[in-house]
Picture 1: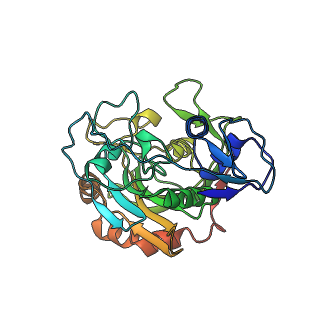
Picture 2 (picture 1 turned 180 degrees about the horizontal axis):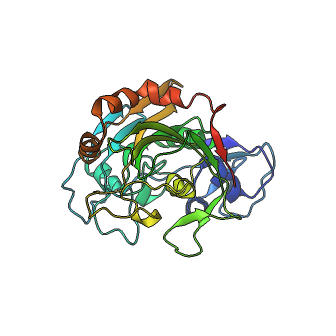
Picture 3 (picture 1 turned 90 degrees about the horizontal axis):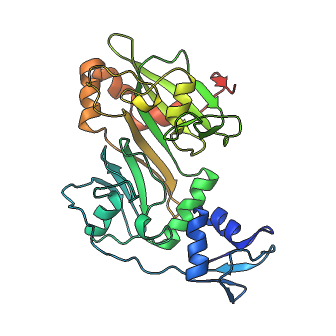
Length: 326
């Protein structure tokens, strides 16, 4: 696999930006496997590239070592072909391994099922192009080969791939709103992100959908224009709203009746990496989400508002939306 350098920067910086990979993963690739620059092998991350350099790289085959944890769950597949897989991630399933994770992950399940996976992201993240939090459910795309992974990563970068979310919040929005506020690590709680002056700029849009029967809660839709950690949760907190079940970001418990953070990645859109065809795939709501809606909302109204076309078209123009950037 190869690409042509478009600007003068360090090799590791260019590869990280082009492949949308963390710098530490790129550094391991360069040092352990090597990268060819105009057909000359190098293991140095600091090599300065110039415009027009041809960078060629290869990835090792995935190591299909079994998980140390029991895999006693299944994951619904929404779409599959030779290049990619789209799943409906269950709530409480962690996407990939980490030092704090002591249970089977989505990656473990993918390997257990014998699904071909890309290797660009490293052993613990085979196939993983993007992720969602443990308690969040919904659409997630998996790359089945490295060519697809590179294409999908580029789409994340240029925003031609993304997701629409639905969430239940504890206080209705006054109106549809676009939030543009920088996000960084919280200075008060290292587990949280927060709106901070020197953070990375982030942009989210939130659309009103349906009020609850008691008019105290609301089902909303959200679209991200950037991909910061906990972005939806942080920007809602900036509006003094919180997702039901999200105690980390200020939701006040209602006697433990909320099973988890009520956030669902409802629709995924992307261009197929091989054909260029636009795909829009929606993930049915999980039972816990549906049960809450049935008890607290008028289901007919909900069903009318959460069709794929209704959600997508609802974000077509922001001309009359309120903007919050301070």
